[in-house]
Image 1 (cartoon, helix red, strand yellow):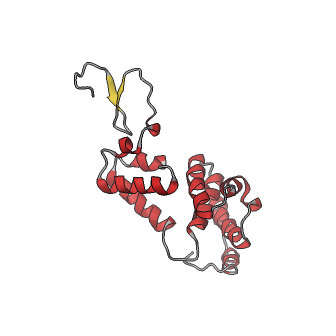
Image 2 (cartoon, rainbow, N blue to C red):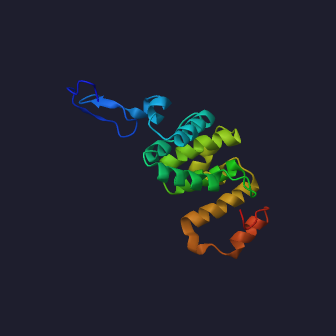
Image 3 (cartoon, rainbow, N blue to C red):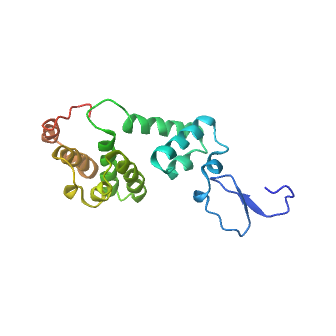
Length: 178
């Protein structure tokens, strides 16, 4: 708050900046320094690394950051799923799964955020849009198509998954760890 405390207003929940009463405020357009200034060092470092690599900070990272323990748990799960170096799925293929299934679940936020990361990984400017609108028409390999066929079946009709679905994946070089 202002030092004279005479100005009515509030502290922004997200960026911790003082907002005078009646003033418009869009904290998502403030600087990374303002958005991360009061965060623990490990959170601030990681968020700024993501911003450097991806060119933006996903809003969910900032929304969760006010609860550091939950943010750390979220990021550990995120990293275990999307950034691991083991298995037969590339980081780009993992993002393909997220984009296609997020579109099926009508989660525009995830389509946009993961689509941006997918474009970086795959170096294909249209891939995320293609996957989000109709992955069957996307410019992907037959292996990736099999991967997405399976992911979409799990997403939309998991009770119908059967051994033949796993056999189709194995035919494309996937294993049980994938």
